[in-house]
Length: 495
Image (cartoon, rainbow, N blue to C red):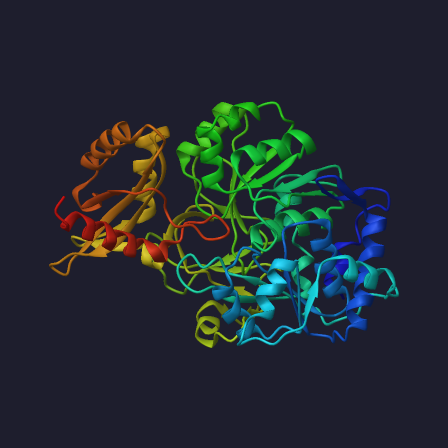
């Protein structure tokens, strides 16, 4: 098989495949362009298994280039175009790509890197002319288990890992969209996240193409106002977004203006959706977001919740199992099997042994508490579960309880486990107040903290200007302890 050929097989010739700003192309044109750009890659010397880094804002060219690499037998790797050179250089050095396809600013940065020597293909007039003169080639057939693409992990708790996905990854990429949302070729998919992020790549681009539907792209970085503009102009029926952006759209009034925009389903993933945000979105727009759970290692969403319970269930084609003898009442890791589960990690043998096992099973580092009828309660990562005063405490539970009380007065908050001077474990809370709401936010948080059981109360509350986020918009939890330490230092300095 060939993953790119599989992705493009369902769309009717004259049906719109991609739409980005003023550019749109049908499936007929998309298939021809992918065949042609694959010919250009092969003429450049791309061999089966060679990696090509695709580093540019989302666009029709991005998709054509990415799929063309796979069609030609290569391995496509989408990378955040906003990565600073200091972070991109070690990734390139470790990953050893055959080519880098990028815009001019990234090309200049790559060519200045002393520790990297890789041919750079600039996305511009010269490359367009080269592609126009290339022959249209058939899809190079590969084994279903051969690598087709890499996805970088979000790096919320440390250095990102390269996740290797096989050609068969795309076959069931639409199992959530079609099996849960009822998607078909008449739908219009739109993800606010960018295509280098597994959430958007798997559940919007891959799922949309597998359904023969239209995929809406946007080159600009998502803000509440930008998301509103895209939805108003292109009228997507399925919107994939992250909790932080849902919260921001509620606070800025964007959500209210989207109440009659024609969206059929909103989906939230990337982080846990706070119950208060789900409730407010439903009250404001009339549609409650469906919560999804997936990882860079699954690409597709493999767990979901479409009610107020917050309990997740497997999506169609997803299997769940547990460690033998595990206590159902204790938060634990689970094992997941789905056709979209990755082959493993690039050069991370310890992580590979910890998270993957024979038979296509993968275990994320997140913990879940089991409930009847194969329902799962997400309780956070291993390091989000803390033992304080002899009792287990979930930082996620604390965050959600305090966020519900703070309401619109707080933009972001996060709880982190820290070590006291006495060597004990305690909680610190870092929060960002909404503009003009600091005094009221402080009052509500203080009252909410006082109402918590003693072992769940944060010992410190730090008000900060912003919380650190990854390029995909997720909270960078690995940086929270450092923020706490900085806040303590400032408290120790006399005014």
